Length: 377
Image (tube, rainbow, N blue to C red):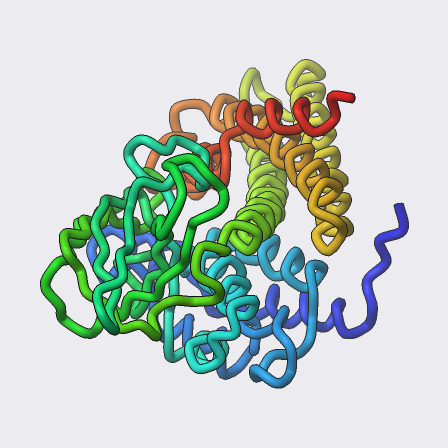
């Protein structure tokens, strides 16, 4: 598989990695996550104004740089390596893709400029991992939409200015047809919506949303009424591919830190890294990381292919990365001993993120099942 980067892509990766190494402090970000706003607004502003990564995968007419899946992969991997908590995937990948395909120019321009943070609310208490299982309803009442339903674990929504809500405007509960997408301005106080914010185990922010007669203007509908599923399906695969790349970045950092620790930790008068059994473990970790990276490359190369090819490649990557994230994270913690789970050591924070990543945009088991279904016959 030929995956040589262009000069522009090398510059993007190098510039972002340098920025994160010099200006993104892990201790400061954890403090913001636990006791502050949950993120660092000045970092987000720098992403937009100094680096331009919020629009890196969007066309130039929207203020982007016209990149594609490879640029998305490079950015996500670098952010994973630095354990960035700002909602890049939720906003600049998933929501931005939905907005672009729906023709929501004004809101999309706000995302690229860093003025708007947009997230997606697609999961429900009874839907499990299936976004097409939508019980939330949107009914037309004159020139307004009236929404009823509940959304759960909407990632990044406590930080958002807008949230995109999936709602059924026709059809039965699990039909792919009949699902619509509506934009809710969280800055405009309106009766009929309750948001319950919380911090997740990996120091991110998420929300549960109760919609009880929320009224939205007719213009809140994005795209064709009842025809949102194809775009949602694509957005989910794009989000899955992006967090797979993020996981590779996390695992590369975890592996490097573990190797360095084993060179320094002394036992029986010598570094524990000199023990062959531990060397074998670290080699196994390296092999898992490289297999995961190769699977991500295949998924990235198929993101713009036909639906079936895209879905197969993404599910293969998500299943491979899920297995690798579990193995690499657990081995790193064990090789660090009790220190591996402390708040003071970075490895514990990376382990939590690698654990959470296994369940975002579909669990490992879900994607194994989907891959089997897509390849059967």
